[in-house]
Length: 182
Image (tube, rainbow, N blue to C red):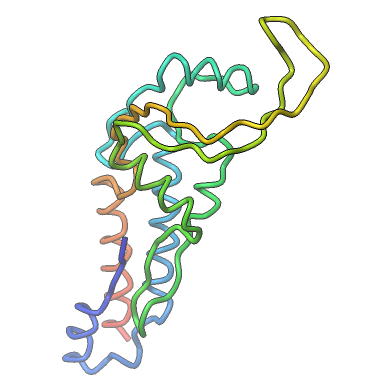
């Protein structure tokens, strides 16, 4: 999600005030955009302000088994995806909001655009605490590579809601006014 101020720099240059333009404006806007995405998503809202589509019954029950209440969709299971949401400076006056780890980038894209079909699950180890519905002494078992069916609805969380966009534009306009008044 690029956040750029270059277009405004041309206006400021015409006013002869480019050297006074605040260097941190794009970074502040990117930081604010990152916080806004996290805030509306954790509130269970997408970038359009609608409620995120519910988790499936089986996923809600797995969340409950892991100690999480499966009430609302907030895309915050272990927190890895949101910890990877960052912003950085790009160019002399721009900034970009992004996920800093490839696996979280893929996860975010999948949540944002949805996915239906089968996917391959790599071989892994699983700790088992129950067998045939009864508790057992925990053991670790090897699980072979296999395919699983996926039906993940579209949950377009990565973006800004109208009010959030308006707040960023308002912030930028105020920064420009400060420069013009100097």
